[in-house]
Length: 402
Image (tube, rainbow, N blue to C red; front, side, top):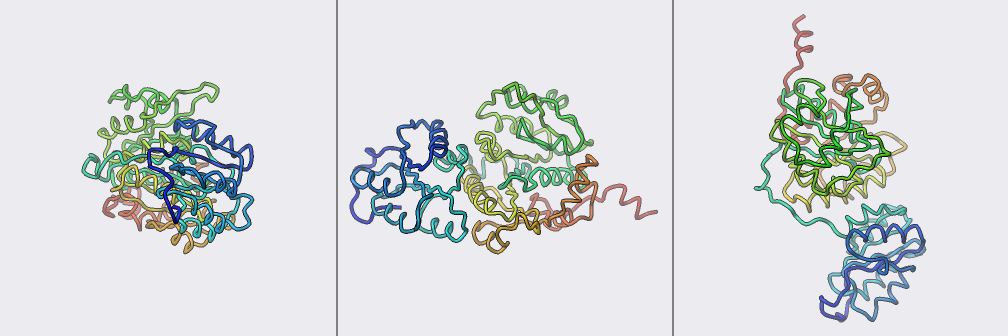
């Protein structure tokens, strides 16, 4: 967004950020978000768009401006007024309570960087205000299609189920030695879903990834089978763990050479682990339902992944399609808004998922002909980067020969 007439000042006179919020909780969340970016609380003021226009019209516009649309009767008109006082190159982030897909489209079309719904997540706001720089090019990737990152765009979308199912099928159907990393060191459930003992290995690895070697991998990873090994954790939450900012990238770099394939189950609410995992991946699968939150955060996660590693293969996995409680938008609306390839669509099947969890096995092992597994087989090249050449499990070969 930029003003239509004159530029107030030279670029180097502009402040990095100013924000306007209409309630105390939002103001505190914004202050928390910008603290890690080196910007103090004096950069966040109480006020609406009118106050933003008044404060900015006669001064150099900060590089980033955040405005609160919560009390706006006409958000588009108010943002238009703001545009008239913004210097060229200003990045505007809007926040509010209007949960409407058409409004989201119109706000984005104005050139607003992002529109976030309250309550504000400080981690997500921090990533929006300061997206990571590109850290590697395609030719710098050593692993080809070996590292697949799976991240959820909405809570309860089934991210871990998708990651676990893919890892299990790569290990059992393709016969490849596969690592499944549950990179949420506190609440990861990959080992739990497979009835494996998680221990504290993931926390230990993220605290000091330089200690990872072949012996550590052999002792720390839980073996579901000869080909599938899981690194996870279930620590005592009363004992705070210090995680290095660069730990995820170092962990993956040290572990990857020991395996044919690595599947990452990424946490979306830890900026360091999320960026570290995306930075090492050659393929990213964003798992979403058809909720408004899923639409918004699929776009944001895609933009983050593309910034971290612009040449990776990225696609959406629509999961739990058919769940009326999550069907706030249509599949057509989702595809139009997110504007990224949809690799696969998995139907809602909570009974099958619950049965697999109860049995302590991966969904493909418990229900090899369910809708999700059929869709994975159908879209195998898109989801894994491998050709669709599955090795038939031995029990199926025995069944056919009987």
